[in-house]
Image (cartoon, rainbow, N blue to C red; front, top):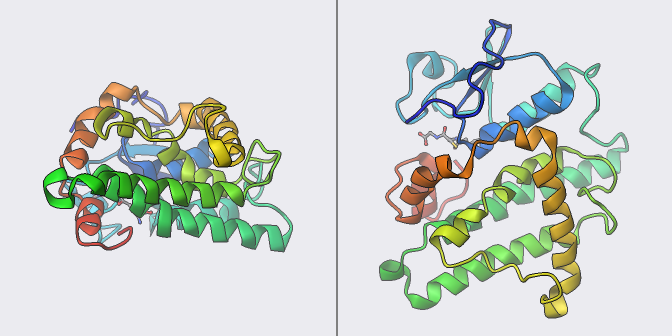
Length: 260
Ligand SMILES: N[C@@H](CCC(=O)N[C@@H](CS)C(=O)NCC(=O)O)C(=O)O
């Protein structure tokens, strides 16, 4: 696998906060975005989690990225890392968590929904195979995925642009990496299926809200800074689309399990 196509020289200086990352990985992008949003100084270390180096395994026995080393102490799990960065560096603003305890807890419900519903459905759709899943399986997988997206979108602040309204937060971070990877359905699965503007029928309002959020995400600086050009992702997603990928996520999806 190639090294990070996006600016590999940036953040290469030795630092006590180290992000072990794969440039292509959406889970990595969550933690990476938080670091960029808050301008927290860090060292970016590119590793290949499919050929796990001992530097990664010694920190995280599961050998997954993102993994963080904070003064040589290991941490992993993308949502945990995002929360940790908020807790460890409260002086690095903006805070990406709402101050109000109720709103904060509610944001966690919808962050959890991304991991428990949206990402597994994203993978079932992406890894759909006509010979195994039947012709109608594709529209079933698409509908299931879009159904979860609609449910998430209906829980958003109605005005926006962000999930909670005017302030960008961790619940936006939770889904943004998959939102900017939805082009893979147009490339590999005959279309994502979100109706064009004005063509959403009874769902027009919810899709209008989705489009507003999604456009805001695509324009967000921290998203752009942590993405590569689309062409670099295609060989990786081709393996998922053919359902031959051997990542823990791909295997979990085939076995009907959730996010590893
Ligand atoms: N639950 C983990 C998932 C991380 C994950 O699956 N990362 C992938 C790369 S996108 C990985 O390291 N895969 C290596 C493997 O499957 O062996 C998180 O949220 O951080």
